[in-house]
Length: 346
Image 1 (tube, helix red, strand yellow):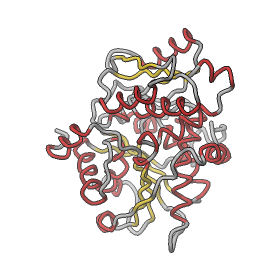
Image 2: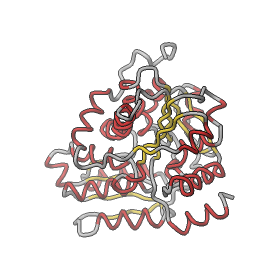
Image 3: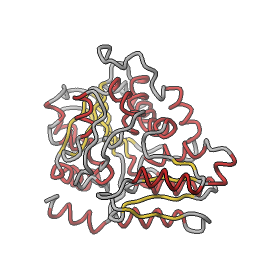
């Protein structure tokens, strides 16, 4: 998009970084399946390819970026350990990656994080000396400030959930795989469109980097919850917009702003961002459960919801196109999941 003011600026990552991350993740991260649905294709009038990161280790794409970042630590960093802050999926990913790499982890999580995500994080930390979960109030306290303070006090390395080149490159391996897998299918070819959920922008910035390299001419679209449209606003205003913590069932996208590193990538490589309601998220979750037999958390259903609801069709051409859909995670408390499917988001 040559008319944008940051076109000449160097971005935080390139396709070489994503390919290097894929090499580090080989044999460690799952090469998750790509599934299709005739019903989804008929509803959208297109060919949809669902990249199922809900089947990734620790239940979400976050494992890719976390493991890649931690695997690049030096010996002293590994001895001291890692600090992270997260609503849940990055927390689990960091705790598991730290365990696999033999280092302590301290994770800052909101006190109202889904119980399953909290339990899983503590489970990965069990038996790891120096590891713990530190709770905070997401509506009253600043998790980034807490993370920086703890890192300084304990001499640990802070790995944020999205605004970090190694994290971004690791997340991009999901789209790298998706493009390769779709191309290898009978009658396969490049994607025309890639749809990705957006929180802080780590996933979409990495995936856009990979997709543009492997599928020339591809459009990349982001999807946010309606209550948390900070990236959509940021693109409209040409600067990073900070919002209050959004109240949405998509807990993985309750970010207040995108990153200083992710935003330039989004501006240059992403065609636009749309939003969906919590009700549309539940409808997409129900579709996954009933039609594809997949458990998908609300945030993980963002990209699919934009397609199944018709929201994205109002912004770009959908009919007849080959569309990659990132299903970002499946970590949801089962009682909450059952309640949402039964009664909806209201």
